[in-house]
Length: 223
Image (cartoon, rainbow, N blue to C red):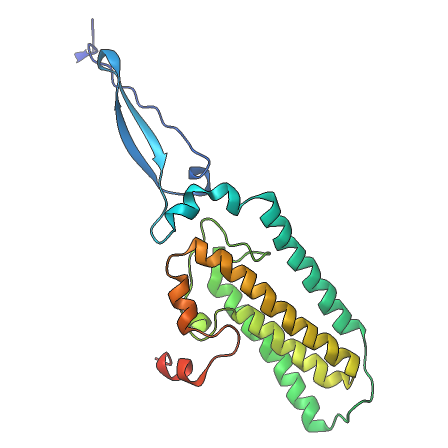
């Protein structure tokens, strides 16, 4: 049987299987499967994007598991509680606050927010509200990330120091220490996910400080 001069003795049927991972923008790989009576099926099989750990990709459900997400949101909630406690504690008179110290604290306060904003903008779509990395995110090692692995946290900690200096309160200072310890633990937990997500993260972490840029990193990557 012929239609418009086209032979239909051999049918070519394409079936596109959209996998769960492909829904997140991952690249498909086409495989051809032999079929009876001349039918050909093209089935899209999801494959990990370049730079992604294959084992982590194949076990994506664990990365996005409810437990992992809950832990991530738990960090976020604890973070806001600690910062709220820092702000609401108020001022005291445990140390003097001369004019120069006020000026320094204001400079640190503004500078910390500038650092956070610049680091967040550099992440782009890779930015997440929780320490769980996005499946379709990209590892950033340029900009502020050349000098610190977590510049957003660095900026936030600078703001914490600024608030503490202006508070003249030992209670606020104690909360500030707790916040620093907390963010160190949060960053360590996040880095465990990042090492699984990105093949090059372990090497990047080995040469880049966590929060405070080292003199060597500043000199080596100043260009």
